Length: 472
Image 1 (cartoon, helix red, strand yellow):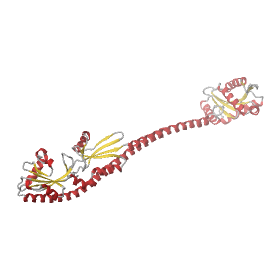
Image 2 (cartoon, one colour; image 1 turned 60 degrees about the vertical axis):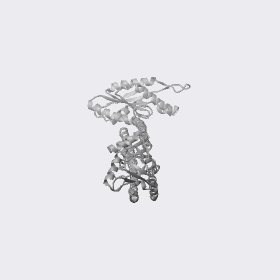
Image 3 (tube, one colour; image 1 turned 135 degrees about the horizontal axis):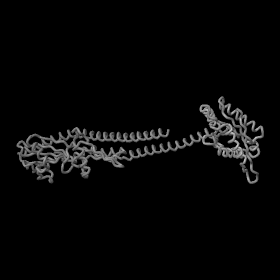
Image 4 (cartoon, one colour; image 1 turned 90 degrees about the vertical axis):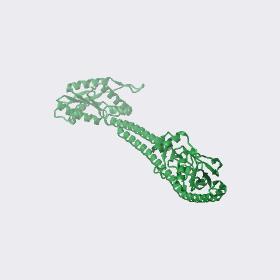
């Protein structure tokens, strides 16, 4: 049974470990769905705000173009500060010349900025100039600052100039303060004990925020780049945490000017590891209990087997087991046509020993007699306690005369043994009477015992301390 329960306990432990791990993975997947879902809700809100900003900037471009016409096509005559005030100081104004250099602006630090130094953006601007139509861009991240801005462009009819409006980051941040991914992420982390933190990163190495962008270290930036570049999930497992890098959207519908945001999810693995360790300890403890109980059951089984086979007092076979052997030996003797004798022994005056010296001494006498008799037992003989002070010896292969001679030697040796009681009392001599019978063709184990018992009775009646043989 032990080798059934232990594999069963191990199987249960493995199953529970798998279930703990699988439940943990399901929880992580659910968290990721909640995070992505929350960010998509932000995206939808931004889409609504985009339409509001787009209308405002389109109106601003119309007003900017009116000022250009009123200046007679001379941008230098436009009062940009006044125009900015009329636009509620929410937008920065730029006028870009034919060489794609910012010639006039409300931002002094951008004055003289050459767009040709911005590579791809210069090409985009030239496309806007060539198209000759107003263009309002979605909210996007500035390459140099990492801040989120929104820009609109209107080429003049002669395409010599491009009028540009830039919605200030402070305006975007004021509208999107409640929708800032950083704030949403902080709420998600505070509401989930499994999450240590969440970061949104783009493939250029910027941690995304509407108000406080910052660059991540090169290792994290490289992971984000690989997630976007190879469209795969990166997972890094450590003892105490799991880092997962996943792409927010793979269908190109995410806004904020980029379609390559990556989420870094920092998961706390303590609950998983503690669950696995607890499961392991329970499994090991269960196996140890099983081993202890098995050892205990084995000991009880051996004790029960001892009681079923051996006499508790003398340590030799008990009557039940001896009678079974007697029945088998009778059958075996007849089948092999081999001689077989049964010797029945009774200790003389045993009742008076119990009466005079007590049952403790009587028990000691029984043990001593059984020890002396065992010295004569051959390996293939059987010796058992028949009952009370009676013993039986089964002697396969011996004739009646041989069994009688053996019984006489036993009697003589037993008679010579002195049983010491105490220093103040004389030694006690022990004798026994015995009857021996040989199995006959018509005998059963019961008739054989009956004849041996009859011979024993005659031995006791005729004076005790003697062995008599049963007549055939």
